[in-house]
Image (cartoon, rainbow, N blue to C red; front, side, top):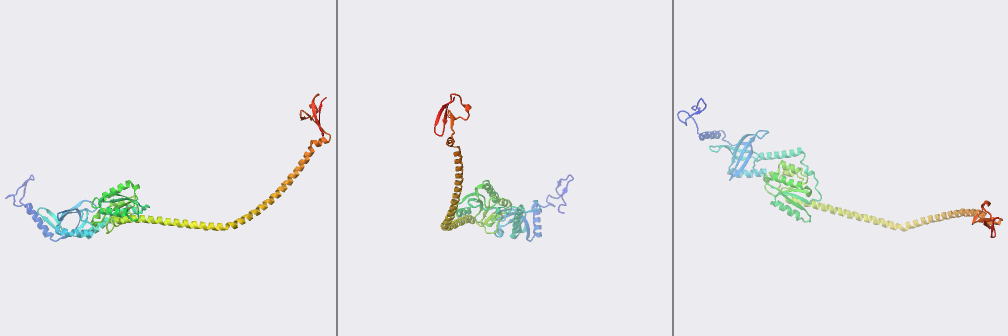
Amino acid sequence: MLFDDIDITPNGTYSPPKGGAGRGSLSLYELNLRVRSVLEDTLCEPVWIQAELSSVSTRGPHCYVEFVQKAEGGNTFIAKAKGQIWANKWVLIRPYFEQTTGQPLSAGMQVMVQVEVTFHEVYGYSLNVLDINPTYTLGDIARRRQEILRQLEEEGVINLNKELELPVPVQRIAVISSESAAGWGDFQNQLLQNEYGLAFTVQLFPAVMQGERVEPTIIEALNQIAAEMDRWDVVVIIRGGGATSDLTGFDTLALAENVAQFPLPVITGIGHERDDTVLDIVSHTRVKTPTAAAEFLIHLGVEQLQRIDTLKAAITEGAQQLLHQQQMRLERVTGRIPSLWELYKTNHLHRLDNIFNELQNTIRVIFDRQHHRLELVTAQLDAADPVRIYRLGYSVVRKDGRAVRDASMLRPDDEVEITMEHGTAKAVIK
């Protein structure tokens, strides 16, 4: 054996082999040469492997990566290897991968790559990448995307923003975009200089529209808008044109949940022609570009103006029809007034004649009745007339102006006045 001559003392310490320090041992370099020889002899042909990229970096014309494999259902690494894509391969692999997947090679991706196993006496074991299968990565991207959509479905939030009604009119617009983006300028020019003279209030809430900071900065902007929600009608998230590979930040669960559950309608115009991002899917309305977003808002305003014009025309027409109907009715009524007046006059004259006749009859009856009563009263008055009594030989004795009805009322020497049919006389009681 290689180490037969190595001596170990009873106390466990190492004792150099007899016959010289080098006999029976290998130098590190010699060992690495043997390892390299074994690997080259055993894995002499390139192989395809599946792994996850834990890091990707470019230095100069080359790309350096680290491959990992995690335990199923967990995050524990069960394998790890460093790798490199040399410039002559990187110049071909990079555009091919990005054009096919729409994304750059980045950490967290699942990849299928063709590698050759290399071992260097100084740098150790590594994998030299020769080719890549972007279809495998596309499948993983689609799977993760579908997983996000499935989770949103399970949470019951995927269509929440779509169910919000757009306010009428839409005039107060909160925009999330990069302050220096050309798309933001295009949006403002298209919206604020519209040919219809529609007025809009627009405020920018800056956010990063590319890279790893897309998710946190857009969520922060949404939080700022939510804090003053009564000031806004809608939220517009826009981004100018660019590489499709820059859109990975719009395919995250946290951002999708925030947009899906946002209390105002969210309109996205992220400037790409490929499949919708997850953010597009959960938003209220998706358009292709910032300019299209402005055109959509202008279209809503024009529709509102058209509805107002339609209502105005309907109200005017209805008023005119009502006025015409009332005018026709007035003319009909006016035309009937003479005949109605004659009929009314005839009916009331006849009624007045009847009333007059009834009144005459009533007056005659009352007159006769009162005349009869008058005759009775007259007879009674005639019967009670003192003159008539005087004619019968009666007289009236008065003392102090009062008629004397009882002789006991008189006293001797009282002076009285006696009234007779013809004249009066005074007397003294004896």
